[in-house]
Image (tube, rainbow, N blue to C red; front, side):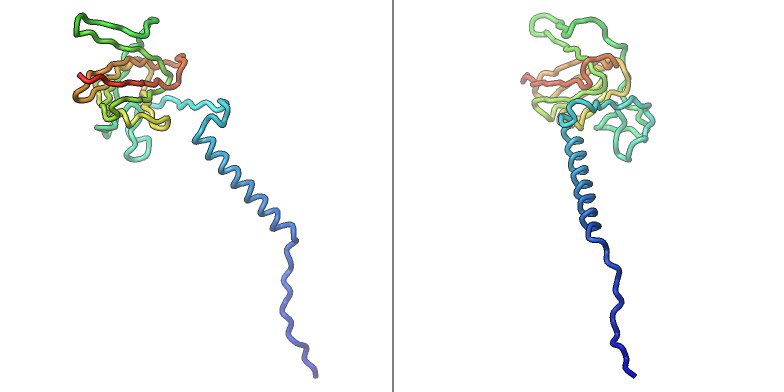
Length: 194
């Protein structure tokens, strides 16, 4: 009796086109991930098709992740119940963009700006403190990037006060309205030593 030598079992072979198809799918997924990541960081790639507009939400005091303030809440003294968000005043009306008051050395000016959602600051010195309706919300450098804007909690007018030790204060009035031309009010300020 002759025994047949033991042959290993043959495994079924995968068609040659399957690894190529898997590679094409992986490359397409990687390209899509890169494209969406770039589009998120630089909205100009979307050619203005995508408009960012966050809907207004109620002040619930804890709807976001822990440690993240609600829109309008103070970044310096965040409250647990979000009761420290500045209340909106009646919307400022009229066409004047600036209001100048006082006489002699006591002249002050207030610039009025309109926006739909929030504000961004570009202040020198960047450690100047920013207040909204007499509520300190933080340092100007906290709101100096497009992804770090200050969201106003509700439509209406807000008095923005920018101050730093050794400098003269600046004041603005930002009116938040759905029909404003700009989404974000940009405050470019160079405080004067005083």
